[in-house]
Image (cartoon, rainbow, N blue to C red):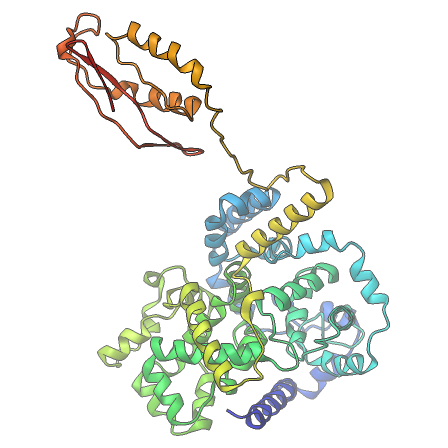
Length: 542
């Protein structure tokens, strides 16, 4: 793929992203579109025909989706779990991250997302380290060119949500300030159109400052290089996606190759916008819950599953005679397959039977049976290995390719560990030798110095006095450590079944132990034990 063709694809994709909201605007009646520019009192229900769903969308399709919601008792139980974990977040992430990961896959309750998302992505710690930074960025003038571009794009972000339905709404004003602050914070990257829906979705759940730092964490640690001018990270991940698609769904891969459907034609909007323009809104929230917990591998799993749902059977591929039909099939996946209770199901056994096509062949049915994200066979190790392979190929074919995925962190646990390490290093520099709370101390056990040669003779005389008992002779080094080891093995020394005082000298068993390693959970000792065994007045040393 040449640079000219790559730039042409990006320009066509940007045009598609620009035209998409206008197409959705035209679907509304003219009088409803005009009333969307009114005051907030109109949006709050003064007009009888306006209905707002539980997510804030005006007349949204989610009004009738309450059947798939878990019971209220289960939601309250999950809320209590999250409140307990967030109250002791450092302990939870250090010891019980698997529990956090499982609960994120089940879905974070809407009432606590504003508290959990900044903790998962590390935005809360970032806010504490940069106190008043967001206010300074807001007061900064900013680049007039970026501000003009952002102002033109603001009305395209969720135009049917009550927060962004009018230019005077607090949602559009807050999004303008958030995106402008990012251009001041990262002037070398500036503004990318795909950052608009990300910032808008974050503002739906939290105030502007934590939303800004969540956006910073996503752009810097989850998807570094995605929103830069060259988009080299997206180019690399597109090659990784194709390689994984070849392994996971080979027939769909061959179909896309046959009709010349490159990954930039469909996965760009998926990955850049984090599926905010692709999936139903409840499913988008569930994808974000897992993404902030497990990292970019969730995006690959979701993308691969969408291709599988669209082109996983021979009948679906037969309906796609060319490039246009294939792209339309990828954009028109049946809605019932994308609902959160099916798409983000915990196990494959929980899937509804109507998701599997009964007329498919046996091979195609095996492919279509996987209809939930977490069952897609792509692990973080697979992703990292394939990333290194494709990175080497890109550098061989494109000498100007400079991107390295070293800054990308694999989810909440990696971000937490990196922040703790950074805090430990900063604490060490600030307080000298003072130990940080999360810094694991290094324990070094040194043996005592060897006694002078003149003091060894009395030791030999004392050994003669205790011939009837098994006595360990400690070597010159490590006396204190080896004495502890002997206590551990004292109960396992072989005996003849009689008291030691009554046993004759010839019945005492000779024991030769050497180079014995004593392992404790905190220390490792390597020592050599010397055991004396007496038989017929002789002494052996082993």
